[in-house]
Length: 599
Image 1 (cartoon, rainbow, N blue to C red):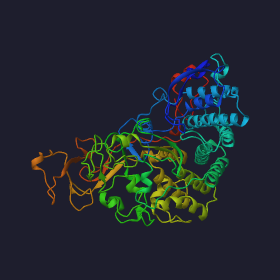
Image 2 (spheres, rainbow, N blue to C red):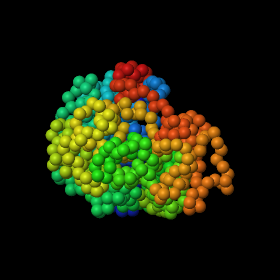
Image 3 (cartoon, rainbow, N blue to C red):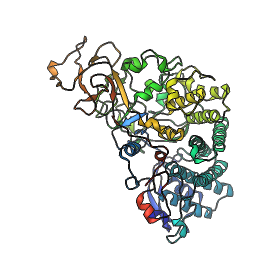
Image 4 (tube, helix red, strand yellow):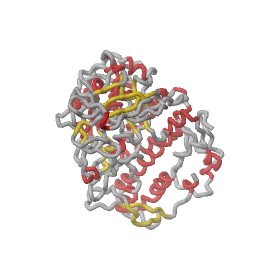
């Protein structure tokens, strides 16, 4: 915390080094700057603001792949689960109260107008910096609610350093003042990966929807919410009308959605509002295969069951839907399911440590303790070429999210009509080859049970569409928080269903390829294992109850869904929608009091 309060005489900043003039994403140390000697030109301002870029990227620590929510389970250390199970306090929860980035932003805002450029250009650069400050503070609000507001660099002896929290209402007001200035002044186009008007408006709409719905469903806050839903609606509509974006589609519903997440060139893609570009040999994507296999994460049955049938009906309307086998679960479903999950018959071309299999052959699900048996192919690069993998682009902001923000805001405001659905949800369904959503849809009891605090069938379906379309893009946990749906994090993460021990076809070709045996038995030596009608040796797995020495845990020991965890703890409402200020920081500044029951 003390680092926030050091007055900066110089800042070490980073300068991109690209071989072309239209991209500036790679950052390497270049020089040191002082407020009185540096901020002299547009180039200076560009270089400084470039050092503030922090877009998500490939990698297991990105927050995209380790999806701490009801969409996926992880064997890693997931904060919300640790809190729910272990009853942690501010002495153990020590992350998030960092302020270095704010210091850097405010330092820029105190010095940028020294540059000898036009007022319009100054406004553009001020807008970008205030955009970064708005994003910074929104993350603080989502985590801590009330936080101190600082809009200047402070000296160590400034009394402001030791003030109490400012209320959420005040902080959010300042956030949207920053956003509005940025939306009014940042230019509408920029180089790849930089902040432009549409990036500003997309984040502004995203955060307005978050704040509006958070206030609406966390009614104990006693804060008005309609204004923020209107901001979300209006900003999203402006992007729709003026941004020139559209949903990417080549008329191939079985592949168009999935292709967005393993492309080597998304430049010029009409759906991409913000792109984190990679160029093999210049800026490596950092892609790694851990998200697919048995490294830390696996998607849940609950997510799989959220996808519609391909005729638009609910999966829960199917006979025996809760006990369908792996092959049956993928029959006649929304095509996005098989572009997200490894489906029966999916051909693996890029096997490795966490993606066991034989290149060019159907993948057979690998079953391991604390994993669901499902595997994620969204973001998986099914190409063994290291050069190809290094060249994968990251779509940071997609137009699809803007459409969903608009639909949800309209529904929350009670304004939704069929024209709204046709220009938003149904654009996404058209890409996937799915039937259109209409007003007054029948209510899916499973979806209604997920969200007992709403009674709008349209809103239930918009939430489903958002979950399916944006899964594993880092949105789901925040959605659960703003929906006040923390109870869903208590659900045990389940996987593939097996009605009994024995042989199973996992590829959908009619031939068995795995065998479940009791965990009390040993797997036979390779020469003694059973083969199928094609002469292929079955893969053996020892099944048993959770916590046994089995290689796959089944709910009932010898039958049922795979159980990846047997205890998710209890979600305490409203306490666990927030985090405490770390204990060490409340000792430095005793004016910082804990709220919502935290200690």
